[in-house]
Structure formats: structure tokens, C-alpha cells
Image (tube, rainbow over all chains, first blue to last red):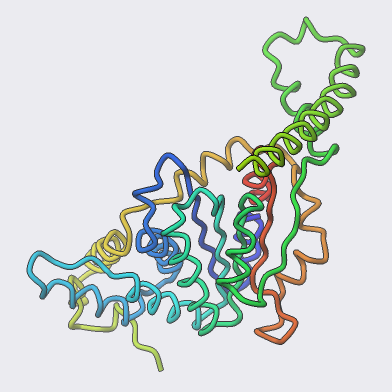
Length: 204
Length: 97
């Protein structure tokens, strides 16, 4: 999807920025770093540096030892760039962001939306963050459930079979059996996982 | 009328001497904005994604409406939240070409 938006951007003047939260890097992925990374991508796609950002950069040099941008500074700069052209922001695995950071990330995104209503924000995450998103980005959220689709699983298996390093071990019958049985097994595993997850939630 | 960095003679490293100064100034500013660089993760996932997996989402009315938007109108859903359990394919869906 990010690439699809980038392709569209080829013909239209729009900005696309993405960020991936990761359990393994939770502490480093602060709200300031995350929003800054989005801004960096938007600015990186501009032919010329907006003077507001250049001025903020110069201003920090006057403080002893330099000063890193604060969250409020980054949000203001994102509001400036997003008001200049349509901006698509994609955030992956919001549930992997620390809960304390998540509040600030969502509030910051909301501030950008308030100032620039044309901004589009795409978020993925586990279902439990949905109420938080709805609260922090009020009345602007459409939710879509993502479940493994049979066609997607078959497409994935076919692509992997094409890369098989030992093609001699494969024949049409075995291939047909794999393509028939694995999607079925996966759907059963998925139902099993969902049941277990629901039980865990109840137990907690 | 907006002013831009390269036109601002007071900017760091942009005394309009040469393009290389302007480029240096840009990369310094970009690094200053954030030490994080999501492009590496993007390229990693891009390389592992398979064909048309997840294309169905791009064909849904929800996605199309979100994508085109209505510039902040009352019915405008500026945020599209795709939720699912671990392993459902959320991350890879985001990379359809």
C-alpha cells in the first residue's frame, strides 16, 4: 500500500511517510523520534527545505550544545508541511508502541489532522488498541478487520513453491495437495489461536 | 508567498555558493529531525512481500473512500485502522504495489 501510494505520488503532488513500531525497539521509538521520522520523510521528498524548518534548525545552534527538536516543534513542522500538500501517514503495529508513548503519538497525529483535515492516516495494529485510537482521533476513524484470506494464502504458497530448491521432489499431485490442505490447516489454526486469545483475555 | 531554505541567505551552509552546501545543509537538518530511519524496515518487508497478497483491501470501498477523502467533510474518515491478530498479514498488506 505504501508503494501503491508512492506510485500515485509520481503523478500527483503528495507526500507519503511511514513508520513501523517494533517490540524490540520500544524505548528508542519515542513520540518525538517517531513523528520526527515521519517529518524527515516528508521533507526529504520536497525539492526545497521549508524555511520554517531551516530556521528552527538554526535556532537550536544558539543553545549550548545544540538542542534536539521537541515534540511540539515537530508537530508544528508537520502541520506546516501537511498544509502545503496532501500527506499520507502510515503507521504499522501501533500496539507495539509503549502505552505511554502511544497516547502522545495519537494526540500528535490528531493535532496534525485538526490543522490539516486532508491528511490521511493509515494504522495497523491488534484489536485491543482500537478504543484508544477512537478516543484520541475522535469521529474520524474507519476500522477494517484483517483476516487471512484463502486467496492470499494460496498466492503465498505458490510463490514459495516456485522458489523450491529441490524441484525434483515435487510433482503435480503433491503440489495440488499442499495448495488444498495448507490453507485449510491455517484457517483452523487461526480459529484455535483466536479462541485461546479470547480465553486469555477472560482469564486476565 | 512561502520562502524556502535555499533562498534564505541566512541559513546554515546555504550561502548560495554551490549546490553541495545546500545538500549538506539538508542532510544535517534531516538527521537533526530524527535519528530513526524507517526506510530500512520498509525495504526489508518490501523484499519479503509476495505478489498480490492483500490486494483485496485496496479494492474495498472503505479504502477508496479513505484514499480520496472529502477534505475534512462531516463524513470524512481521515483515519483507516486495519486491525487483526498476530500473523493475520497486516504489515504485508501495507506493501501492495
